[in-house]
Image 1 (cartoon, rainbow, N blue to C red):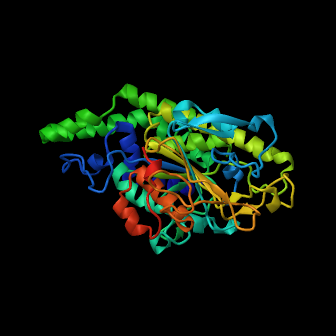
Image 2 (image 1 turned 90 degrees about the vertical axis):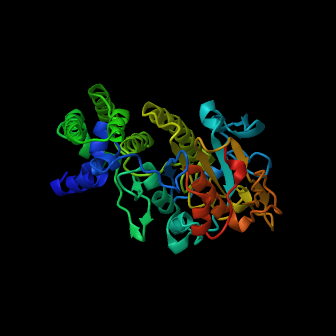
Image 3 (image 1 turned 180 degrees about the horizontal axis):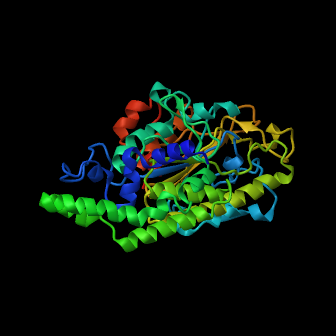
Length: 438
């Protein structure tokens, strides 16, 4: 990797003066390292929730058939599914209610399912090129900002991350203040951090250097509060060595751009406190117009749900299992009736009227929110309006069909720790779906 590219990535990952690296090495917060002489107590922004969340958004412009086989999609025989036994319709309990879903969903760890919400809504487009518009909630976000960037702006000061902007790991178009964000692939992250002379290999030495400097400073003049902060946050040499070993071991396993590689990169970036939001992609079948027997849909769904288990395991290894929200949300869903696919079950077309976002995190209930109904003319199914208090799908509910996407965005925002007042101010449509929240 070229030296200038390497320097650019390192300065981006660790911030001005490499504060993020010094914070990682010492265990001390960046606000203390930035102004040690003036640090008396941790800042507490008034707008922050008690437990703000990092967000791992998995999104795609391909328009995956994620919506076709989740809980809530087995109530009508007119909806078709893969015939493979790997995707067999299987009973499961969601929030204490028995529902049916494709087998791989039922095989997720019960601890994951206990905090998984399936939210049925529409995206109002069947155009691959509109993925950016969907991320802007089809114009509902003020100043045409993307939802992920709005959330990042509000979560960064609460999480004290190195940067405010989201980090993009896959080939997704993500903007921040109107500028397109670069893609940092897992392999590029590995090349920068995991070399023998890279910063993670020097973590213990960096820890000793900066703690020695602080101890010398505080020996000369320090308040009781400052010494207490140092005692509270500083990690030991053993902890620094263990952290370095774990992060380097994780990064060494990156082989390309697979789901496992994305999981490693995201968990390392969250552990390094680089950004509030990481963006990646899992496939659940992709743009599967001609998917014979829905075999691709089957293979990709099985692989993606196995990857969810791997991701949660990695987050647990870093102590982040309660601090990261995982969200699946794509540009559109796929057709659910063969009538909308030339009368055959070998693939699916685009569906602007139904998608299912899947949210996994400590702030979510195990729940199925909303549902589908056969649309006028009977060709295919569309999302229903949503009752914000019960989560039930009903065409007379208080969240109309036209506002289900914006409501999904607001609900995700509250779950990650952004205040409802900020979301109501910045997102012009929809309301928080309280039935989805723990």
